Amino acid sequence: MPHTTEAAVLFETGKPLRCVNLQLPDLKPGQIIVDVAYSGVCHSQLNEVKGLRGPDPFLPHTLGHEGSGTVVEIGEGVTKVKPADRVVLTWLKGTGADVPSTTYGLDGTIVNSGAIGTFMRRTVTCENRVVPVPMSMPLKEAALLGCAIPTGGGIILNTMKVSAGDTVAVFGVGGIGMSAVATAAMKGAREIFAIDVSAGKLDRARTLGATQVVNAAETDPLAAIAAATGGKGVDYAVEAAGRTEVMETAFKSVRDGGGLCVLAGNPKKGDLLSIDPFDLIRGKRVVGSWGGETIADHDIPLYAEWFMAGKLSLSPLITHEYALADINDALRDLESGAVGRGLIDMARA
Image 1 (cartoon, rainbow, N blue to C red):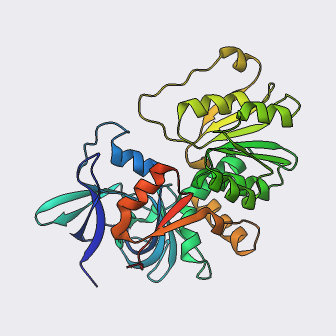
Image 2: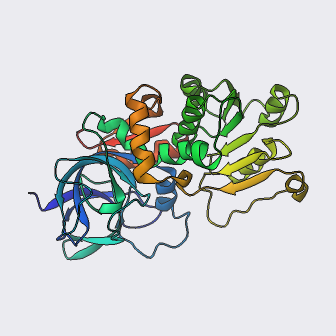
Image 3: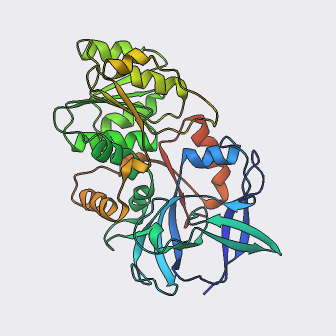
């Protein structure tokens, strides 16, 4: 078995990632080696690279928290998976051993890693950060089940408990927002508003089930929602843009007397919200979400089952694919707003 892995490593915040060959450590009890097939590229990773999450005491370190692959080796005590199993790699904690960190070697330098890293061809993770999926589940779509779908879909299923006839607005239709649109459509929401400033993203949102799209660069989304709901507002709003002004707008869009706004985006550390307390008094609610309140070992296989049964559309979420060597291009495209969900394809040259 190879004792090294190519990985995209963050050495300094605000600087491009560097692809280097790392020495794999010996497995600790509860750890697993996975050959990564695909890795998702998420906004929270972009914020980390840019230093928007505050000081980073762990430099240099690996990145990536969503992916798919095949188990190569298991450490002592691992029973959840075995070699050759297909797995989803996820930052969401499931059952099994929790090994919160590991380190790789680089010419005498230690490169840190959390419990999971996916911007790398072969990764050391731990039992509770993998979820097995059927061998018939395509690894490309399986990569979305590590973060985008559990967060966006989980907000619809678990946090909001959307049912047929409800009205939903999704602000920001990148990977998480599109996941929310697709899941709301699967649950039979009567109206699904997709709000973004990218015409391309709004077109994809329609294919996933959005009934109305609003280009916020051209139209006031609050006015559009009010016109379509008789001034009442929506039952539920998902904020997935990661901007405080969008969070404030999303909160204003929900109806009085129980409307719920869920914040999923990652703004810059220190940014603050402004909320009119009378909106709260009138019964509007706002909460955050921790990964869509997902129970990884239950929900991820369920999403895989729905996908393979044709109930849940995943493929349109994937808008761009990159080689590992092009990781910085992937991050730049994500920052520009051009990407829905971008994937790193480890087989791509």
